[in-house]
Length: 382
Image (cartoon, rainbow, N blue to C red; front, side):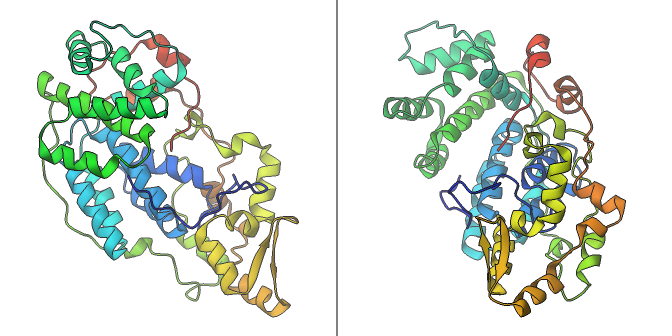
């Protein structure tokens, strides 16, 4: 977890939820595509990770990878936590983009488990009755009891449902201290204690289930690590290599809904009519792209600014306007249908959570109620 922030707006601005990345994908869908590509063991995960990274969302990407680790990988890849801490510390010092590719490659070869992810969604969706065996303050005994009885719903609800009040922060501290073992884990705890307690509860839940890996003898991932590869193909393309019109044809090789799971998430596109959204992306792309740091910087470099009243981009004179669009007008409306479909994919596939479990329920050890799965709606995953 990191308390550093990307250079993005933090005040409410007109249509600031429609954020276009460096190659004009919708940012929220790029994040979902990254998650699904990792679970599908697809190399497209590298493309999506670098699409976020080079759009200027480096710290957000790091937070997102932490979330994915604790939701899907922590149970079967305990030692990988220390590796992530080491690699992200290295990136913070060097800002070397190779670090991101190396992390993605190492996640792609590791086993995962979706139990924590699904439990989180169920706890957030339904009212769960907690079954206490001991006094509420006897945290370790309660946790051990729930694990022994395999009452995973009570365990997840107790850990995740606390508020962010001071007394509940202290509860989280005590809860974590009752779970972790050894100086190594305490060191990790010191690194996260000053950050978001919602995420800390997430980590606590993962630590609980790690115990079950040893209890049930599940197959754990091996401590092997892929060395650095050449990730230069994911660099932002030099605008002088091609005419702007030809750039998207060379880089947008992956469909935003490649595996058909975008429909499980709350999407920005759900808020708008298809025709209106397409118009905002195609005809007003520069304004929507300005919410990505890379595009905001490009606009400033050409002596331009964002007019949030008129919702467009303006320049100090016509010469700078012409130079900017000569370099960066990708003419999305004139692109081949295959390119527009990769970026916009107006007609998303429809999938459900039962299919998600069929595809990604490998290595599971929690029996989740089918009725709960059937009643799960769209989720927001950050």
